[in-house]
Amino acid sequence: MSVKYLTDRCLYEKVLLERVPTARSFLWMGTSDIKDLHVFSRGRWVPFLKMLAELVQRRVSIRLLYAKEPGKRFQQDFDRYPILFEGIERMLCPRVHFKMIIMDGQFGYCGSANLTGAGMGGKSDNRRNFENGIITTETNLVKEMMEQFDRVWRGTFCPECGRKEYCSEYEEILSDHQ
Image (tube, rainbow, N blue to C red; front, side):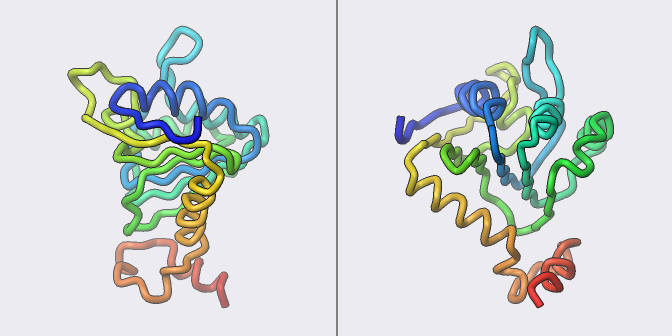
């Protein structure tokens, strides 16, 4: 597979269930919205954060870029997995609107779905959003996705950003660049 177009529930199955658990080195996720997301694992529904905690236990490096603070239910689930406090690097950037997942520099997803139950989650067909995206193992495409993610992560756009009043990270990012 080099590039494959997916819609709706296939995003959940091919990305969250089949690919994410197989990360070996790193997992980068970008989303404008992140909410209480659950996945079906070992015969029951569990928070997606449980899957991420298991990756951290296997020493997979995880980065999460998001545009707004997650809700109360997400925070409650996050608190259930203390390994995530230090195990996930997180950065809020109010300008992030892309949705992408990059694994080990060899797999990428980009599309319309946020990391939410209605977007990427396993909700029933009559409760989920209509979403689409591509998955790829094409080296050059994954590399371009990584570069966009990394430019935001490094704070490339912070000095000239017009949204600093909504960003809790920019002062630390800018001090890292000086």
